[in-house]
Image (tube, rainbow, N blue to C red; front, side, top):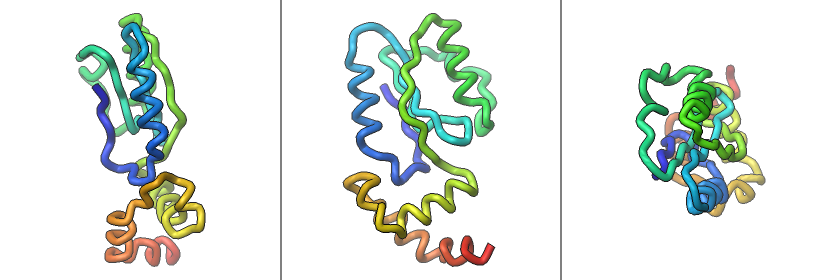
Length: 131
């Protein structure tokens, strides 16, 4: 089972594929895709471990570290994926740069066209440039 955030539209497909391969290996483990803000963009496990999620201070810079510590307490190995960005102000600026640059084709086979359209409608790139 994997839980995936909804605020990383440029997340490379290869990271999700990597998570699936890690979980397909024998033995129980946790796969964690840490986010730059201290949270995570994906968490996966082979069996339910409710303790990983109980009494968590969500939306803080400590979420991923709390999860790692809880996994250690349960004796679960944690396999970490590459860090990615998600939902803070710096990430919004990076997202706009990524989606308007020539490097967008390097992100993934999907250039987040709905996100590009939404940002344009909201004039987010213009607002960021003015800030």
